[in-house]
Length: 267
Image 1 (tube, rainbow, N blue to C red):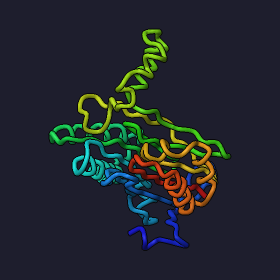
Image 2 (image 1 turned 90 degrees about the vertical axis):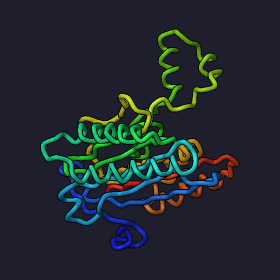
Image 3 (image 1 turned 60 degrees about the horizontal axis):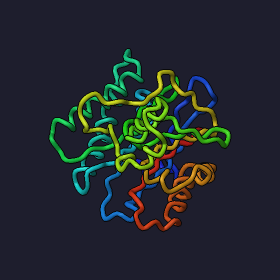
Image 4 (image 1 turned 90 degrees about the horizontal axis):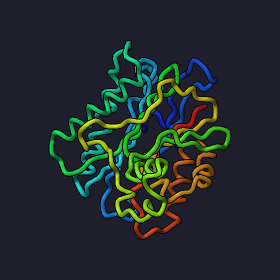
């Protein structure tokens, strides 16, 4: 369990990367239902045992359930558990990026075939000796903080992104986008069926010492500014998670969504 390897309130995973100087990962996490009556976010990690991480790498997943009540929460839990289980059995000769994208698409088909009323986003990273691979679908995000600069690695698969493409193509105006009542709705997510768009990297991201990776649901970045996120991530992983949760709670938004954040600090 995670608590078996806790040191000073943090989880540490020894995983030496081939380049970049990072020799391990510290973990931090925070999850709250916010102002909602139920929690539909889920998150999880693969085994943090040294032998397992060395053999199979380390995977972290955040998923944000959709659809209300039990369905959304149940789907997000399924996404997390399924992706972690699959990640531990990645065929050694199959490129990790292809594997992750295929895994998410398979999970999407599995959820869609059940006819469940709900879906989920997904944001995941798999840390291997050659670097970090990431994948995402929906509007949960993966951020990299390096040298005090914050970068979103993935885009949102929402309707507004499609509308902005039409603005670039001069089919719509910005006013049309602002007036569209569905602009904030998701177009693609786990459970939507069909061909699922998945963002990801082909070449591994080589983590440098003091890098941070943040996986989070939209309840985080809709409440906290980039500057506030950077301020929180400047702390060690466990403290960073608590700081970020404190920033969101301090806003006191009456409609605060569920929020979940997983932080990987490379040391």
